[in-house]
Length: 140
Image 1 (cartoon, rainbow, N blue to C red):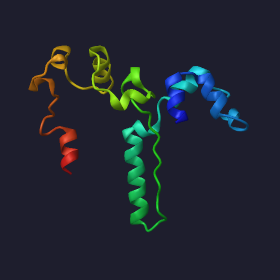
Image 2: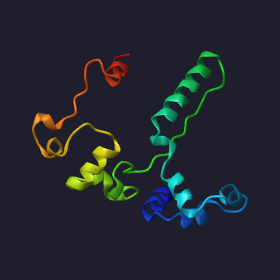
Image 3: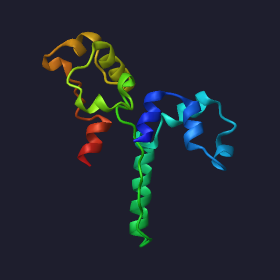
Image 4: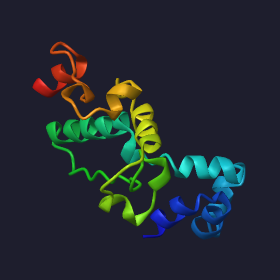
């Protein structure tokens, strides 16, 4: 919907005008359009630490017999693909340019060099060590 459209337009002024109306405008008046856009483009639904902490808090609430917890997460379609962020075709992408693939790799810190990235062999997969933090976490 609208959030995807704002992301695709990449216009902090538009975000200010259409989202922060009335009393809300005061909350962001100290921010430039560029700062507002940057904040908008970093939704919490892509922040693994925030999501983890939300679930830990919900788990704590459940253990203490507190009220149920609702976790709302905002994400942007195509978040890791700069050239497709907020655009509808991102879910139908069948091919990706090498430059977009490199951006994706760099953004997500995937440990592959350019040669591995372009290869269709098994070396083009990033394999995690058996004792890595990620594998340990998945096995817990």
